Length: 244
Image (cartoon, rainbow, N blue to C red; front, side, top):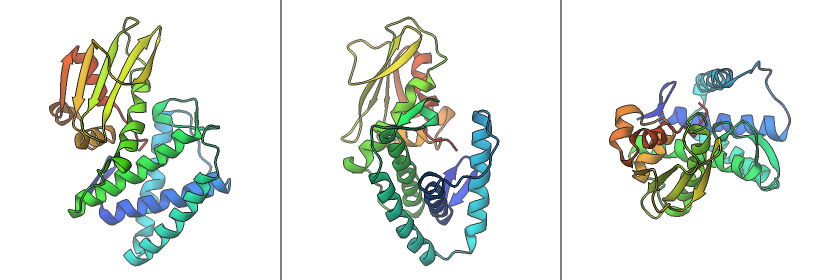
């Protein structure tokens, strides 16, 4: 019953403990303005810091029983819901680091928090043989949020203005998105393009695993169909829509 995590293998309880730690940390830091001192100067520092607190929390909380863990998650989850509902969704908040370094609107930050809970819940379900959370009302917002990492993923990819990369995720929860080169940046548009430079198709159940680093490298490439510019299309498979 292992859940994939880039720092190693977590079992289902570890993943649930991680979610609890996320709730408690978010309430402390966001709502109560209580933060741990940290020296963070770049992306690597941020990842190392988050990996460290995640690891220490999961190790320290092993003494919690499963019933206690469930009760605490219910309690913290209600408080997180109340906190998020009190935010102006269109006001600028903290950056969503995998989408760019600039302050992000609260709706994107909240969507990011939702994807964190969804993908760990899905890992738990996969590990324990339970049905997936693939109904469109739950899964579509996850995919729509994850693909917002595409412009930042392509930020160092040079291409002529007008170059387009179309991503198709089939199914009711999926969709089509077009990444378009404008001057020196990339922009993400909803919908398809008549003649994309590269067209990438990924099954929905593989896409979320690629975007959360559950599938990488050759396995990711085998999960995708790329038409047109192969190098541009393959860059889509490097999307990472999680921090750590």
